[in-house]
Amino acid sequence: MVPRLTTALNGPLLELERKFIDATPEIERWLRNKWQEHTPPFYGSVDLRNAGFKLTQVDMNLFPGGFNNLNPDFMPLCVQAAMTAIDKICPMAKSLLLVPENHTRNHFYLQNVARLVTILRMTGLNVRVGSLLPDIDKPTPIELPNGTSLLLEPLVRTHYRLGLDNFDPCAVLLNNDLSAGVPDILQNLNEQFILPPLHAGWAVRRKSNHFVAFDEVAEEFARLIGIDPWRINPYFGVCSGVDFHDRQGDDCLSATVDAVLAKIREKYREYGIEETPFVVVKADAGTYGMGVMTVKDASEIVGLNRRQRNKMSVIKEGMNVTQVIIQEGVHTRERVGDGVAEPVVYMIDRYVVGGFYRVHAERGNDENLNAPGMHFEPLSFETSCCLPDCCQTPDAPPNRFYAYGVIARLALLAASLELERTEPKED
Image (cartoon, rainbow, N blue to C red; front, side, top):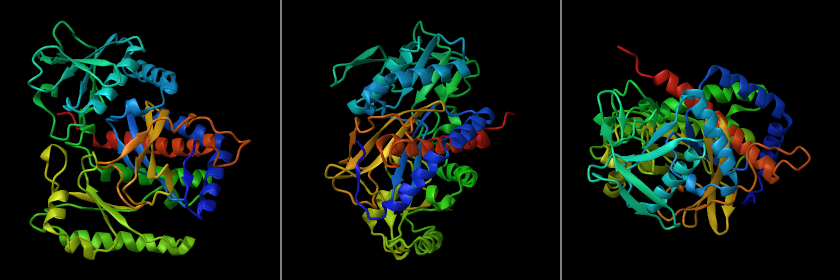
């Protein structure tokens, strides 16, 4: 199933998808060469937006938490990709410790952890789950609504290693984005592989660094297939020294919103697009859709009321927002049932392993869909994002999903550049 596109502007998108299909050999060769030069993150998920005239990523998550939403038919893809990632990093590995978020009451998230455990165990690894929560002081089984169960165990730290009681793993896989910082128990683990690396967590990582890298990737890719890079890449700007409560940084915010909107309007005139331009102001670190707002005019920044400022000032784990990214807003023209939808693509190593649609029936096509009231359509991606079919139309499911997979892999490549450039220097 491909969600219907509620737009008369699907002509340009069909032309863009046709470019992808026609250039498939060049695209795949180019990506293979890039992965000879750069190491992909262990896994990741990418939020995409399809505007009918533009198809791009809007966010890249290096600690994906929705493996339970993938089509179960793609489990073999997940297992094979995970085997490749493990062979590349630690070919002698036989045991792995998975460290999740502290969401013990969020059974949807825990079903994601259980699915990850299943994938990793099917690679032949001995996998156990260690919790950062201090109240997990003994093995604690949790029964999940889908009939599965998960055993959380207390972490045990030795001098340079992390494990569990009678369990000394070869590697540690984080499914925790470290929004509140890197806990002491995870630091200086010099004898084990930590996946992803600690500087991939939001304690260090910044979205603006990712999109700087994505600018470079999109420019090179656009030259490869002969398109305007704007059609796959959102404009953005950054403001630091922001304090929404004390109205610090409002001048920078207003000026940057104006500048990004002006660039979008110019592109809309160039392509004859009659939509209303907008930007998304969001915390430069963090996830879960917190610290996000849609803005169509700089005056909206100055006019924020107390409730709006409170909402923008804090993200996950109660961390204060001091730096924001002002990103070009991309309309979504896809719908599933009665809801506005956006695709989310999942990858392990350099391989696309599936995806789903995030759907929100109460949000507009220019709003953040990662908000309370959203739901997921796990079976929407009925074909792989890796298998284009040149005999079908550009928007047939294999080809629409292939275009999604290409953009997602460009985001993954940008993430690998980002991690290389922000890796802490050894003393």
